[in-house]
Length: 58
Image 1 (cartoon, rainbow, N blue to C red):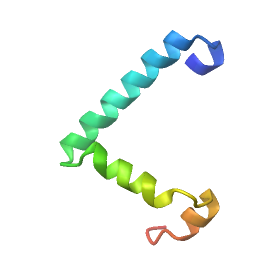
Image 2: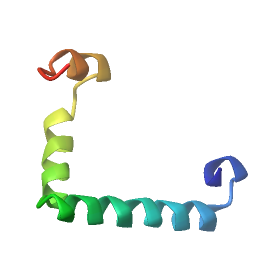
Image 3: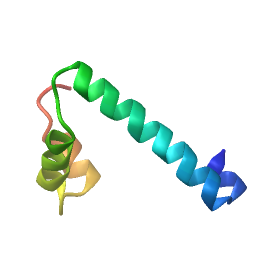
Image 4: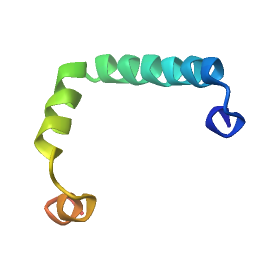
């Protein structure tokens, strides 16, 4: 909804909320933000279809 409304401040607020809760979830499972960054780096340059086809946990 924040994106649809086009209000930058609201979008920033909602994104911060999403990131905060994501970081809490990662920490709860003993994971770090760096783990997510490493996964994004691994995917860099891959199309979404190629990345999905390469998954082994369908």
